[in-house]
Length: 359
Ligand SMILES: [Zn+2]
Ligand SMILES: [Zn+2]
Image 1 (cartoon, rainbow, N blue to C red):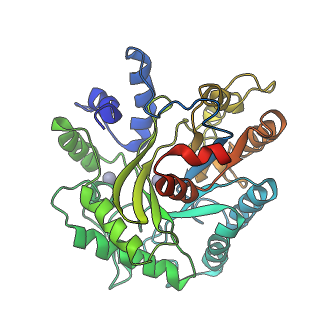
Image 2 (cartoon, protein in one colour):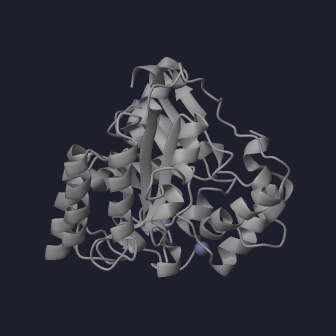
């Protein structure tokens, strides 16, 4: 675990550690460090048949693009056998879209409900992505701590987290949506930034262990879709892996890290953040996907954002189709798409990457 957050330690003092900024600077910090060692255990060719492919997509909600765009995205994934995860943030607009849905919300909720069958996990990027939600009034607090920071506060108890998560899971149930995991909502606001700096000053920044314990209890109660819960917390191109954070028998909670940056437009939906060659070149000979494959990494997992990825106004949508097309062309038979929850479950059941031999 020590190596895991070494990058955070490097960049923390006096700097912004919103996840977005952190992810950007983390790779720069690593580039300067002396030969960073990968955290995954390197598999031999015999230990890994195919490399697993997957992704997390942050910030998915109908305020960014119409539900039609989400339909187009999920159908594309389904048609091409692509598997990954997309967050659903039920209270992003300040009220729960389950309680007061307009026609667009109703459409989006139906698509979100159907997305698992199309190959996509559904993470709660907590309820609002901003201030905490009041489930009694059905409204987001106007002021107060942001959810992402709240997940880090050492004084919050297992019970408090459990109650809050349980309310979100119930809210999802009302629309037939079963959540599969949790994504830390990043935030670069002044208050969060300064508190993250404080929390990360003495020890590497990390979620309160009570978050994982609460998730485990809820998994044991059958509140999630599955019994093993992937959490999306941090990301690194070089220093990645899957880490058990809590477990009890057949249930577990894992930090499953993406190992690419976002070159599908990112959260600012900018053309300068679009680069299909970063993933795989047109001739299939270079790119991070190829590098991870050649290094015998067990998986290659992307990190992307709905702002840049969506087929309505996302700068990265064409790149996404280019990349998935190149994968089909050049890595046929060498990769296997999986949802994050399926990866975490298989890893938990075997106690390691052993299952990768049979993919
Ligand atoms: Zn987000
Ligand atoms: Zn904030």
